Length: 520
Image (cartoon, rainbow, N blue to C red):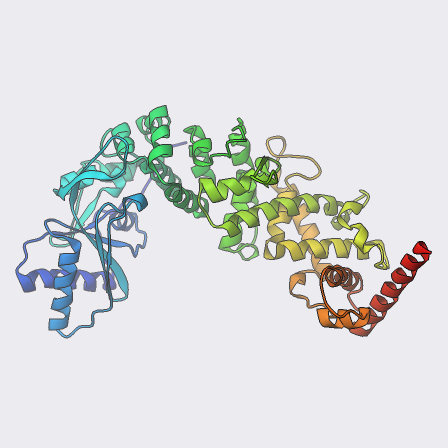
């Protein structure tokens, strides 16, 4: 990677709201005669110097607890007749990277966090500080994760402070560097490895060579597994996948041999050397989605599509649960390795299943397709459904598939183009070929009138089916006929409720007579 050229501003100019917030902070100092220096810390300073907007204002107090300052500020605002919008005290929670109590106050509709400058010491096997005390600005800066996140904006003097003496330089050079030796920084808090990767990818900055060496060492990897909660790892990974450069972030994770540390597998499954394949699928999918209209995929669809693409090589890997049932290892990664939502795991597994079905349908959805329709997806339960043409079969199959995957059908279709007609990733990937396939199939599906087919209501409801079948109660029989009815409805898009009722009645009593003849 070439060294980036980064434009960094010489000074920080707070916007109108920030100026009013800072005025109230200084007003509190003057009102009580406090000698405390107020500093905005970390990301806000970095982003302002880069010319970016940032609403995360963290105030570091020199010799006072955040809760103490917030109480004084509340009293000050009330004394001058201003509204106090909201106050919250967030207790320390080391498992969630909250080592100190944080006070929050809503000022001009912006939540501002207040903490004291600190100096911390850690035990060898824990992220929980064994000692905490008020620190100096230099001590606080040196204990932060990266030099570019160690900058302060002194509200009292209206100046930028660089206590590591290299934060500004690293920002201008586009380098990710730790304030202290990287191994010391990472062993103190191994989560900083993932934060370094995330910021490196986010800003397209270069990771320092010593930092990479420390991040990849066995001792740091072991500490990352042992000392950091899976919830915190999951949060960092999700920020990477949801960010602007998920491919670069996952590439860094692979290069540092952290892929199977982060995405740990079930004990029954052995990590392969296929982490680069995972990133290749992610890379191809990211390039395809980036080349399409933004409106085709919302943020949630993009996020889960990237996860699904990355785990494509694992889609057929299973493990046995306690009931000896096969479970996709992707499910384990989401629920146990990353501690993410169950619904995310289900969506990604459903995407994998749907793209396999799309592979059989693609020849019939694009011009010049000549592959026989796969009967396995139609099923014996639909043999009673009259099909007017081969297109009506395709409409039924595609309709059922879209009803399963709903809004994510375009994502599944897109990823199926990577495997059609054979796996082209790492061989001869051509984005334009996949885009053409996707566009042709999407057009065919729209021409079949199937977009949002999952919103289509059945022509007959359960009670009406029971009336036709002369049943006194529901159950599996009604569920079976509901599926048959839906297949009939998909095969006959212009059919009426009366026509459907007549078909249902005729088919049911015909099958009943056939069953009786068989018994005789």
